Image (cartoon, rainbow, N blue to C red; front, side):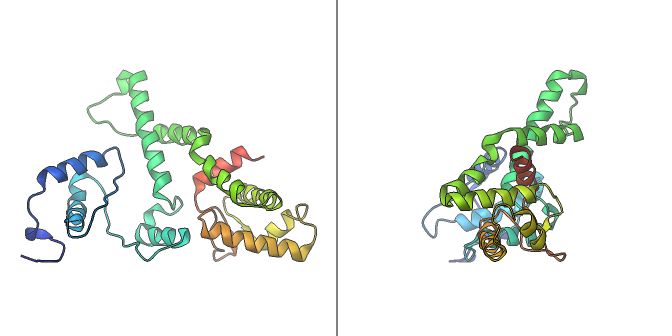
Length: 234
């Protein structure tokens, strides 16, 4: 038996009720697992990771203790979960999944003939869920509100225009293209370039935009946020 280290494999025993409770909570909720040291938190989390496949879930142990920026966190997720490229945020993925389940339930209620013993999701459920997700302004409004609460009025207009232009192009825009489109907001070319650079550093650090890709294009990190922004900023 290992002493002083997380218990795994045959060294882990007991905690049956705790594990059942956690799996039940994870069906509908996120879990925060605080506590003082040496209570067995890591051992329980490692057991959840080991049993995840039996519950039809994907689990991976990620150490984020040394990550202190949104960019670092997103980069780690992107490396560990490459199949989620394009979402780049478990938050949005969970929101869509919740809406998909709700849409499927409503479809089965409206059309009982569609209800089967297997409660599966259809493509139309995903499409309906995505539309409902974008229609709820409160889901994404805090991203805009945060900028308005921390930027000076003149920088607010410049920043909102920058994001609005990016939202119109799923493939992103280059720095030159952004500078050209923002000319009306800041006529002085040197000042415009500096303001753009400063804001892009901030937007990248806070998880709004990406760093330039191989084609030197900058885009929204999350396409749901991009689509919401495009619908709400003409």
